[in-house]
Amino acid sequence: MMRRAAPSVFLLAALFATRSPAAAVDAPPAPPGVGEFGPIARDLLSPRCVNCHPAGDAPLVGDHGQPHRMNITRASAEAGLPCTSCHREQNFDRPHGPPGAPNWHMPSKETPMVFEGKTPHELCETLKDPARNGGRTLAALQEHFAIDPIVLWSFAPGPGRTLPPVLHAELVSHVRRWIAAGAPCP
Image (cartoon, rainbow, N blue to C red; front, side, top):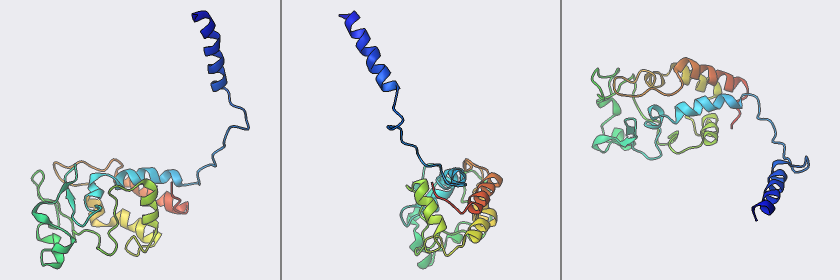
């Protein structure tokens, strides 16, 4: 019985291993620059970015995206408790102390810039759209990545916090090349 099955197994394997040219589907090449967005998305999906760009109205904290203590939400500032009540101009020097940077805040309720749970394609489309990115042009977006104090903070988040996976200088280079290529989305 084994001798009869063996040729059949080889025949099936040969059929699956070969494909006719008509059956092959050629995928179109990715637009130039689309590969630049992968490293950008990796940083945007890291805790340093997602925590301030959550799906809801409450910021997250830590490397595991825990809810902010004291029931802090975007509405807290409207009620008289701005983020800068605890988040000063710089980090506290103890592990897991309140992080700080000038003008510490979440994106506005009108343009929350949600990163949490988004795909790289969704992030890309959001970043390019001034109606969803806080009114930024691509040039302003590039500047935001390069010099915004809160963005810079994420690369020096203080003791006890992980860094984004792509370091700042490399991220800025990817952003520059992505924008120069027309900001194509994956």
